[in-house]
Image: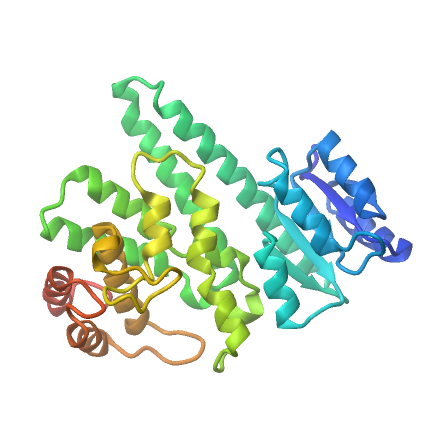
Length: 339
């Protein structure tokens, strides 16, 4: 039976390490274990795994320091790290994500939840690697093969986006609808097919960074706390980090990075102003806001098309590009989009 993936499990407590290792091996994973940060680092360098499960509270070298060292090594930097720890405070999670971790599982954990997160991040890692290989292959592919390659690339991008929606069922289909609406806006603006293709792909993965946001925050029905909002706001930067090493023929990673920026500099993550934003990002921004308001969210029911129209019109030229708003409003008024 083929292995489901290679994992390095790190925990200084023998009983916890054995439990974790047994669960993963029963699920078909090839697991190596380490009880100290130094041993884990050597093991990862000698044979890089596909995923690292890492405890935080360990003597000599704690999990945060080990994560920092792992991410500082070029050959290990892209390996996803999941913290498995009894620490559950939001501040610890913020620190872990800042160091490059992709997820956080709190002890005591449920077996099925642990395996679901492990499976998701290994599949995401493989998809990302596959995309990198495909994009590199594109430059060496004959022109007549390009359409087939782009179709395969879009399929892989769609699978990448689906990983997010598996963890956030309330927004299932959100990225696809944003992509379709953004493409419609771009066509009405008369943009060339090259730009439209980039907008289509960026729309499909604009929220891919939410793969690093804990599921309990994504689906929280009430208002988010300050630290929780900080984690949510990291998703555009996380998306950029996931996509930036893939050599797309379009600025997909930059579009994803900028889709929450606003013309007056009030957006995030960098507070860019109008002339610093890509046109493609301005289009995705309007499509994203309109779709989010028109559909259901865990913290509120759908507000509807009229509310979406009011929002983008009220802030036309202030938060959102005027030309984009005018076309988006005209399209929404037809009743053919986001209904």
